[in-house]
Length: 492
Image (cartoon, rainbow, N blue to C red; front, side, top):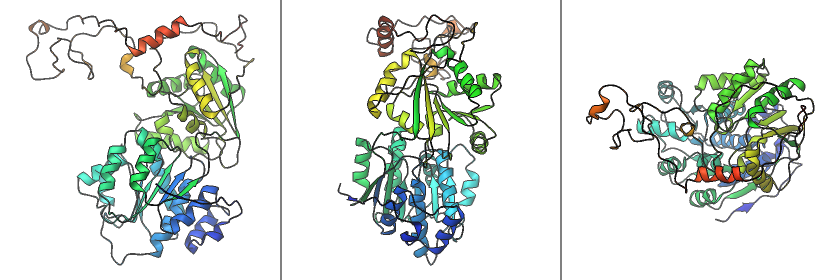
């Protein structure tokens, strides 16, 4: 794949970009005079009608980098007649929050234009979306799954798409959307303009770009897997059972007003939120199990400052656009080092400074080393002398061993009491040993008709079991001390 590089200019103004006058009015209303580097490079390329491959992380202004020129192009080439439910521009994004954010940008910059836009995503009633599709629509912002739902119901016509945008393509691939994306692309006209934005360029992204883009222009405003210099990064070495206490202490002691906290699991986000609330700190969790109205409400309260702490998983927080966010906390380090870069990139944006704090247990040392190798720097380890661990900690359930990089941990791996036969796990065969799934129509074992029977003990894990071998190796290795014998906490 060949591409054309565009030199970076820092002296350019929006007036130099030859955008339509209604767009310039909207830009002035928003208080902007100079484009960001990605806008200065991408807007001329998109206006020229060519394909674009852009490397830009969140917080660089990339959304306006494609919405502004798209609005200009669609206005400059109006259609004589337009069928309902037949968009001219399709913008695909990985998450609901990002979809809402992008459509908000379209509304902000297109408020003086007659163009119509719509956003669609899952997790909400599909009927209002079907009703909206019966009217004129120029720009459609959508997540892949819900888009294909509409295609299947024949409520959406993609034959008129002139411009396709894949925003945060790397995250869409990480979330398993590649098959959906290929299905959608197959439904589009062959002649169209394609814009692909990605924070990183993996081999999968390069393969996708090779098949999608034709002699694209190339924009990259941040080197791959780098962290902003304006972000002050630090690590607190602390056992897992003390993390929630230390986090509550940091928030109260420093009087933090707005902090985004990342956990590795949805259940972990819920537990941490409950502990913070019990400690008198208003907090809310957002993740895939939360309803869309609950997620929207929590995010709105966090943005306007009425909710000081937002606890999120990586998926839910992807694409969050929060101006001048001062603090990001990694309550648990991510399995994938690149996700650390995405997480802390929520702060230190648009020239403002920010702090990224990671709470690291001894079992996370391997994750920490992988992150430091990726960002090519060692993250300073700091202590909090003012923090005194509570004397009597409540007992906690034993935690399952950490997974190797790239694997997800599921709640059913947690040790639990034996289940009655037939109680079932949708990922396991039934307990009768005959491979029948719970709820099937086949006759049950006669012994089970008189009530639940004790579950058979699970077979011991094989020596090759990766999870247990990791734990065994971990237990055999000497662990660094996280505390001194003194009662006051001292991280080393």
